[in-house]
Length: 621
Image (tube, rainbow, N blue to C red):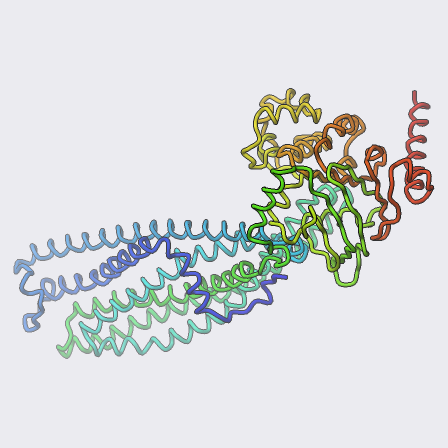
């Protein structure tokens, strides 16, 4: 199970190198951004120096101090001030333009990296086994793909490159200060240990707070996803107040963690500002004495005051960027922990030529594959057996039905057949070959499946039926719509097959959604059909429509039908009765009734219920 609370920062260097690999396709943009940062940092240094030139050469000229600029500065004060002022404007414009373009370039790069990373996470999750999703909360997986990726985007756009820019600016400023006055630079640096101490305290204070914030965000996402999916149940049982109380608890954890982080910021920034003022006071005190002694000029002191502000700004930014890096490292750990989670190896393996072999076999004889379970036992958790020593054979082209009480293991059989799970014991054979030697994709493409709760995605009816399969023709869709009694629904919609559906098919009735699900199962003309209690949630009229089409559905297919309603399986070639994970009875409908065993009792119960219902309806009439 992936839990951000248990992840600790260990391999920072490894993480940074791995993150940098995502920038490789965009290295040209990164180089452009770095060049623009150098231009911006140079412009930041030039401003105070230009101020120094105006003061020392024209406002308070110092004749005995020669500088390299004397050769190109005009002697006339008015002309010189105008020229330097114009140059200052050019420097400001260049700095603004360089910073503006740099931000655009890095934001674009960050969005590109974020897109690539999200696609990779999404693709990786698609390959995970169902057991992975059984162990991990969906809300937390959503957080990996959204919030954690966003923290990495912030690192790329406002973190690493910006830190380089701050370090570059700091280096340029210190170089300029040393050039103007090494002594005054040393005096200013006496404040740096205080700044470092405050920054270290700040980073330690906010690190744990931000970790708690991210943990709370994951809990909020998980809670909201769970409760919004089950909103009808929450409202039906009057659980709103209790849900609100639980959400308040999680939300308060998030707020408290943020308060702690904000408290650290509330101390840090005023202290840094105060240290900046202290530095200016030191410059004025020491620099003023140097001016009186004639060893410094007023222009140098003024430039140092401006440089002092420019020194503290990148130091302040570096501390803030450290928080971004902390969040990014934690987010990267969680993302890479997810990406490094291996696919179920037993499910992933298959012979390299499996797909080609399967296609070849199917092209030769589409109905030649039997399905066989040999001594199969399975448990979702250790020793809690759902299936015990199951063995049976389904001949190609036959319709086999499975019945039994809830929890008997009927759906588990199909989950194993589709390789969502692997049996602990025994073998499952398809066409005489162990299904673990088949390509998983090819295996699942051989099956058309209709479930009890049909899953429809936001999109059109056509998209939900074809599900990305471009080989399904318009003629095929029209014929299926007719065979599945879906034509009346399609004709009643303004856009027909292209009618848009709400998320989950919310604009349709349960019966209409099930008809679309049946049509989707048949659309690619699969060799095998699995109908897992697909008629249990539909009304009698829709059930009649499906019953009428049932004989057309199974022609040319090997069909596996799981049903509680025995009326839907009476024409099956064979019925297998499951009880407590074992096969108790097998035979045709009439054979099983004559045995007067479990199937007979199930039939009597349903027949009695239906007879009572018919009598009540007769009384009403």
